[in-house]
Image (cartoon, rainbow, N blue to C red; front, top):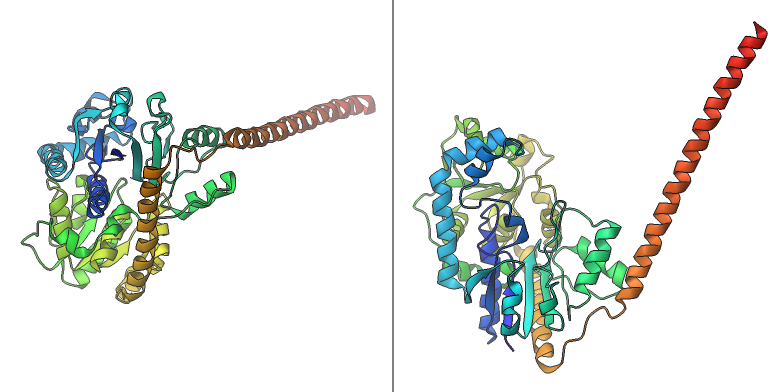
Length: 436
């Protein structure tokens, strides 16, 4: 069976190290089980309006760009480092992936439909709804050329926002043609099960399918030692940076910062500090492996801290995926967003015996799911997972109609109240006039 993998890879707005890494981990796990696959070099819909190679140009040319001043300062400082990081990530994929020769967009994906018998959507927030773009139908395989193809999802996520009812209608229509699905975050799994009555497995992020030794074999270790590793993603976190500074000072550690927020460097003037941005995936792994401790708000920063048995401290993140992975491994106590510096200093070191036992259990469940899904589809034809999709959509329409009815009722009640108030004022004026 010819298998194609689609997910975030080298194309991401933030040039996130984990995007190419989790897909590599998944493909290598399949290969270790004798299953060959090909990564579809897909350019996600969210990349379309952005200049990934030179973000500075985007901030320069758009006066209304959100947080423009911070962006101009950041990408001016990191202009050449961004180019190097982009190239290093591309080199990682070229070195380790078995992938398509060409890159594809949503418009050109149909060109490769005939090359695959089965398609697997692999992990991360690939089923997110973007306010200005909608769903990325490439990640949902929701194009005519893929109708009737065998489809699997492994550890798909939706990000921090729940779907509206209208978005739910669109989403369930898209996934109705999948053969089997699995989800990464428990909150998303529960929502799908409640709506569809399916038994939806929760599985591990692909990076957990391998041991520490697997990553050591590709890591490039830094020369530096005795440092606190700071890794903040997506939104800058002054609170986490300040807490990292206090911890580093009290433990006589240097700070190595792999984040992109160059505009906050003034905060670190009282501690030995180095920002490093122009590195690749292998370097990122090396810095994590060599760190004394890790301060992060990154989901995959937490994942690798667990795999590598690092003392780690977790800052605030808008979505629930970080909280959910900590809860999954009984490590919610590592979240320090509401802690003082003195409380952080008194935190006990992490004992990973419990999380290791949980990891073994979840890994067995996750690997059984994906291997059984693939082997079953090798033996049977495509079977849509939601043949009752019309009933599900009707149920959502009923809920929408009920909400609309309540809105109309509320509007009518409000109009009556306004009318009564106006009539009451009018009558009071007439009474006043009469009494005079």
